[in-house]
Length: 300
Image 1 (cartoon, rainbow, N blue to C red):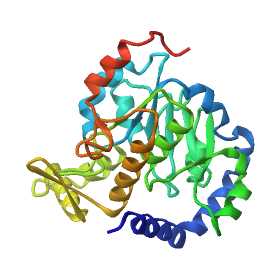
Image 2 (image 1 turned 60 degrees about the vertical axis):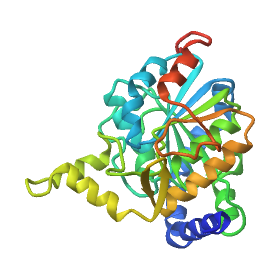
Image 3 (image 1 turned 90 degrees about the vertical axis):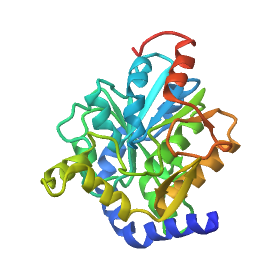
């Protein structure tokens, strides 16, 4: 499938299926938008820092020991995708930022102390997420133009700032980090494909899967079945094959295009993640060593 056609189909699907819910969510979010505002303060906070965008893919678990080593350094900023936030906290890693564009109620942050984390929130994000968030919030719009989007952004406030969607939340985090002038960006747990299971342990999705476990349907079997049902495309990596769906494939293409055009170095620790040659593949261990060799300090 042509990349532009794939992007167009993803965006058309969002418009047709979810636009009315976007309008409703925006109306409920407007008091919070008026209070917290947009992305402008983030520019000074991310400029010249190493930014790690944490997705919820299975390889996030492998990188956690190295993430923990650098997570509180002054020259590092972790942005956790909503689904990745809970497993990171359980590992003793406290991201300075979380990001969510989820417009339906999900318990990504339920029962967690979010008071020390800034939420980067799509202006039409689920209002329950906004109401329950304990820390600061920075809102943004999607970089989609034309009707009906322009009217929606005018209602939200065009001064909030815009992020290219790339079809998933980690691609929006990448867009924001590059737009704010990061020194480098690492994509951790941004696997964009799967073999036997789709997500890292400890995500909200695990709760439902574990509840469904029986002797006849153990955890591994349920996860494999879910991965099998989501197999739409094949991603070859050497002798091994991974699988992905329409949305992750669109995000993969978009991230590769964006990274290849960026003057800011973009690294990827995901497996399969982005393609070698488009983005520099680098393990979290080596990225952490690079960061640790640079300017020292901890967040104030």
